[in-house]
Length: 207
Image (cartoon, rainbow, N blue to C red; front, side, top):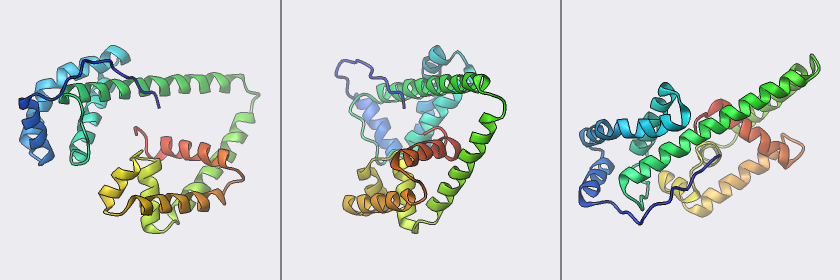
């Protein structure tokens, strides 16, 4: 994942932003919508500056706001609200650029391969991914939930513990159990890490 650190002066929320953020955390949909409408153009322009694609820029801004709304109760903001969203939009934009670059590279690699070799490898990879996906699906319900939140939603262990009302130790135990079970599907840990990354791209894109 590509991340960018935006240098800023120490800028905290002003009283108006604090009021808006508290309202959003308390599920005030009208306040959330008003803030979105007021600042949408600025965030869209920030994304468009990197992507040069208005539709994709719009999708990124909307995704950032949806995540902000869904996770408002657990998000900790140490800057101003506007700076936090701006940084999130830029990071998402850079991730899209990185993903597109990798796709172009894969196409170039494909064109250099002997005819038929790519299809054969792709079929083997797909069979392995399906096998691993089924293995994830067979984990105990709570273990599966914790593992998906950790590996595919990229939540921190504390965030998972808070969302599920369990201890961090329990979260770690679930993740350890899941990795042990899934490693049985593959021959080595490197293959497991690769397949998990591929599954994330296929079944949980955009995280």
